[in-house]
Image 1 (cartoon, one colour):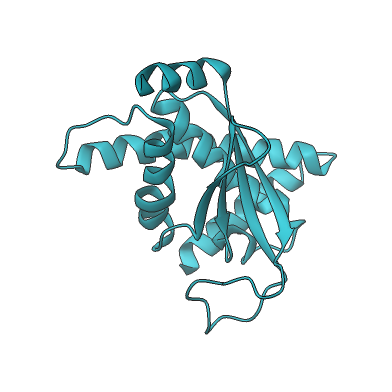
Image 2: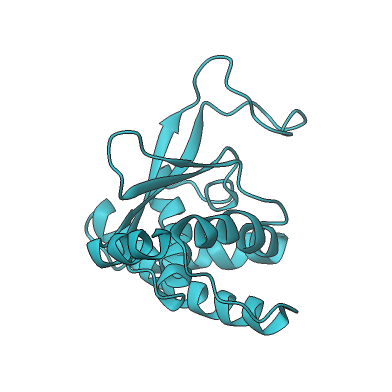
Length: 176
């Protein structure tokens, strides 16, 4: 964990000195995570005993929020939800994102690295999507799923996944 904290802090500092805005920093961190996502997918596919490829949107998102999250962060993501307003949007929630624990920059900037990892996994699996990281306040009474020992956070990371139209059409065709 300390090695990751050091390396990630150095990565953020490297990019901070070369950008002029928060959005540019987020884009660079996301790009850095994108290649990691491709490699993580390749590694997990190689290690898997089942030689199956995910073809459905919910299957790949469950794979990301459970298997990928566990291999990277040692635990699954806190939840996965479909947007009520938009059929092409899904959200992965993390109440204690590892990336924003070790750096002192704007929080959504730090979590952009993870959004890049998610985008890389999705693209490598054949699911074109835009992924963005957002910081949202934790609502009163909201469950923190197993984080009783951690200091109370006022926010959580939400990774918004917006799929391309062709992916939605392919998923609808598979449903028939």
